[in-house]
Length: 344
Image (cartoon, rainbow, N blue to C red; front, top):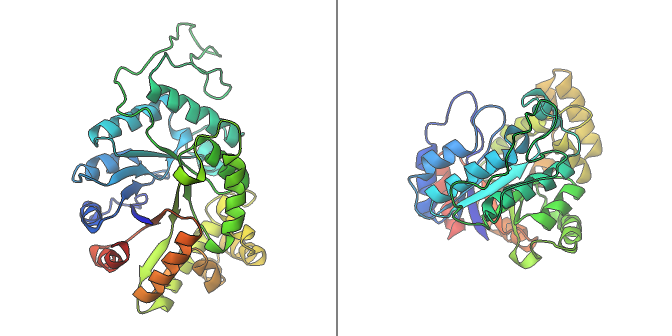
């Protein structure tokens, strides 16, 4: 099993040590470095800036929000990063959620599965560069002939010849239909809040996609990158306390009350009552009480917290569940150094 470093997205200010972490991760034998975006920093800029100090690690977006850019614009970013990195780019895509898509990007969120399929198809056409790119739509018609058009749109190929027509595209997906679509049209799955004990359920979703006519990959050549907090510590209780606040935010505040995909993930794990209580408290402004309502088991289903021996045992569990890459976050090189024995 491989390791990837997740830089995440920036908070109020850019991180001061990300470049140091990226170099250290490459030296430690990590396979990849990923950067995320929300409604502040973007994914591509950090990879190009800090990735320029690396020679080997793959550079991935986890994830680019599709509503932020047209498919052709995203393909331009990806082919540029791929050239600059010598063929190390991974394009991770995701639909985000309606609060961000409609509130920040000013785009409709409806029909996310259809939009994803159409988006990926256009990106692949750009990267293939076999003919001028066209799309019948309905979400991303090329050329555009709708309201306000001048009727002068021309189908084009990218000026730059892409380095790789098969640049890998991974999808961030949480629900059964989206995971099945990922197995059908993508090269990898960026799994958030993956729980090894539910591997059978995930495999059913994936197998549905692999079995579809024209599926791009099989299980043997498909990558599953699971985001996981792997914390090597002699004080698990303190780390659990810190993570309670994070989980309360994602379960209670990252999404609309009637459509929170992160909350749905934990409901599928069996935490229906706990999720409802956390959400109720968080949305009523009782954030400390919401954090206190997060049980240890909910955190430990999707995280590894403990000493080196415990972490090694748990990593074998995740690998046996089908995970091909552990995508981890660290705050400093000291934390990263404690992971190095697990990577080797």
